[in-house]
Length: 328
Image 1 (tube, rainbow, N blue to C red):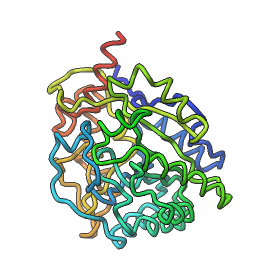
Image 2: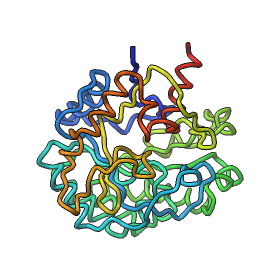
Image 3: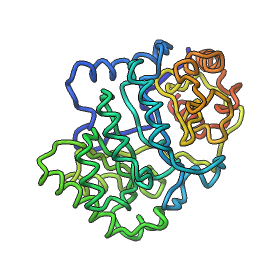
Image 4: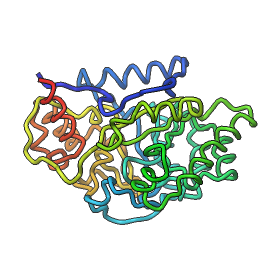
């Protein structure tokens, strides 16, 4: 029996989940997030879109996928391209957007980011968030972000000391980034804003796993939620790995790159399949229910995801199947 575990690579270890809204539409969205993959139900449109506001980054983290996976083309998403994406999503029940995707850039580098967030909120998207390394989270930027109505913010931060943090977050300064985070939280209080709720998270690098309790205690009186995500070893990508596992993303989410290219998921660094481009008038909905996506879903459902070009050797797939094998 092909197994799907939703959010299996994500682990909350402290605080309270930032996914805490009790608004009926939000609850329905999160219910579908859980049930669609388990029932292999795609729906007519993605519940969530990963939108690559930029693939550029101001850091060079040693564990980042971009050290191993070349990304074709670099740039910033224009506001016009963003509007095309949101306008189609808004009339098709799009619930959530993440304004970057794993290992693909620092969204605060895109100066149009606050305007993008505000536009998506105005169009009725109920869950808007992005990941940041917080290096550029100055007071001025923080104020603009808080004013947009952003729902949640995930901040990536490894370790609790400068030695460990700067070892992995190459190009960042521990004291400066820590101050940026504290100042953001304080500014939110001064502005009397509940949102965005703030999650701090670390990649569970082998060196950090034994001190996750220390990480939790360091942050528990500062942020709303403390979490870690599984370490993906990009130096070991197992080809033709067989396991009764299907990727939940195929029934939840899709990605649009900075130039408008519609792609299968955030791990498709090489744009393995041509699903269209919103700037040419191509539809995200058509791509979502198109022949390519349906075939990929079928192979995943049958436990044959290794036959899919982008899935075979995927670090996420490798990590999850190996976890299942360890628990047998």
